[in-house]
Length: 377
Ligand SMILES: [Zn+2]
Image (cartoon, rainbow, N blue to C red; front, side):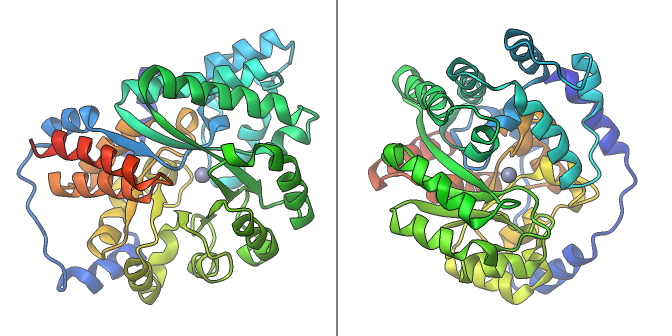
């Protein structure tokens, strides 16, 4: 994404500040875990990462709308955006917190009205993933963000589902669709969404929870998650991005999730980190997103490597790639370079992704075999 590259350059020039909790955790685990030496240069790892079979488990389709597609859909649907040009929109990609980003994100998704719009958005993302050697994706959509604008549920679902089926047919890519609840709305709203989802339940792999984390704790959705599990869906929730470590713990204890989206603030509670490692509850970490939304001052301050060394099943994902400056390969490579991850680390993170995927055992094994054949020929 050349148009966004200058932004990353600026980020790299930002003054480094110390991340207290990160350093504290590093000290905690330094003596107990082996450190391997990086025998590969970052540049050779960059090309190996680009060709590596991968999975993406945490991305929001609405956050993959590139500026040019957003304006094309706006023209097609005769919608006036609050930005006059693509450049003006890109200039708005300066966020000081999660809510800053969500304001731009919710304004952008208003261009999505028809089944074709949802297909086009999904297909553009899947094409990029295919080029980046991503074998399996699990993608979020927020039905409430669309049905509340009077977009028919069927138009939203059929457009996305059609693109996912096409990717499976054309490239043998495996896919999963996750319906993300918006936590700023009520649990009754969540239940109403489940009713709408029922007719297509077998095409949905799981239920997630996104939107502004503060002040919407996991405890607000205990009944909704109970029902999601009873319906047979996998569950996950965003926690510990802007919310505290206790939200991560509550996501495990109250919502009983299969995965945690972000979760990085678990590092404030070393006992919780040890528990996540022991339970092997995967964290879908989104490094470039975390820097853009000021969860960490720079990528070098990110705690992904520390959590990995502590035995937590971390994965790398893009979150909202058009807004945060990179898709899968860029997230992987930028993180590898910033944290000096070894080749073994890169393999482990990629493998964690496949292990954490909601896939039948045989399909999972096939993807892992492809990763092994590529990484350890
Ligand atoms: Zn997210």
